[in-house]
Length: 101
Image (cartoon, rainbow, N blue to C red; front, side, top):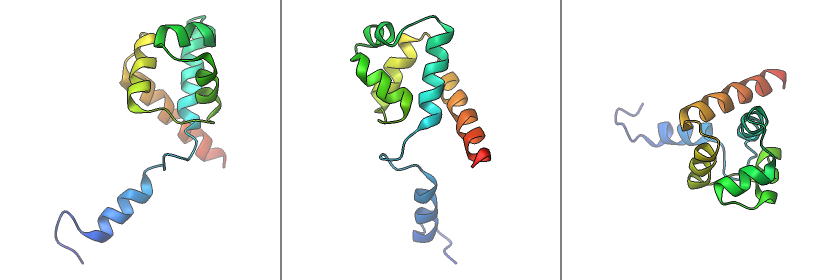
């Protein structure tokens, strides 16, 4: 058993737990949609506030695309919510989705 922090086995196990960039982040998409709808915003209005194309909002909400960290920050700012609130809601939704599977 490896006694160091950077043990290859530990690193591999940790890396497997992180979603790949190509895997859809459906919890995040649903969380974005919920916050947007709660505020009475259209996809176009949110896109304008975040300086994004409206199609990109649709792709994010449906899980067809994964946003960069910078895009997530811009969306949270446009929705006037914290990154922590967005992440927490996305985690809850992902957990619910996993429980159903």
